[in-house]
Length: 174
Image 1 (cartoon, rainbow, N blue to C red):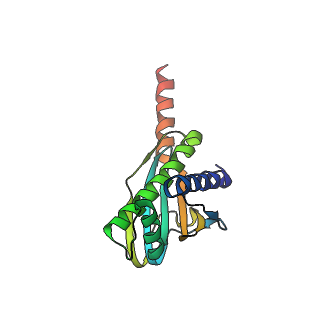
Image 2: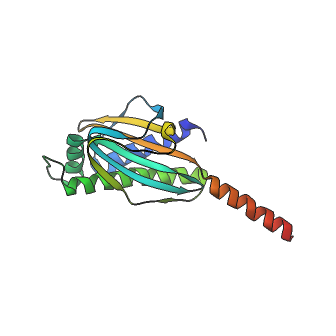
């Protein structure tokens, strides 16, 4: 799978969700195809797992103030600090973006499942993944602030082995 193709899916999904759910135009920053996992000095990260023929994680990351701004736009209210409502709203935004990405990506790789979001808020944290250098990071800017959308994906080796095994079993029974 070409990283530029994954990048296009991610950008399209983010622009579409920001436009339709938030009425928010966004600009794409410099894409980092070899980024590490999300982390923050003071911010919010929403993580969603993907599983199927491919496996991985998608995330939405932003500073606390941007999380309040994005949540306020989504919920049509104002937030001065990160609350449970803000965390829920960021989780829902991540779910919409990564879910939209998943829908487009599935057309290329087959069905995928999507976990519910896990949202983390705090200072000086880092998410960890066994494949730390295979994250694709796409930064976005908007009138509400900066945020990143990332994915870390690879073919599901277990599924490939299971499919190959089933093919061998079927062949031997023929």
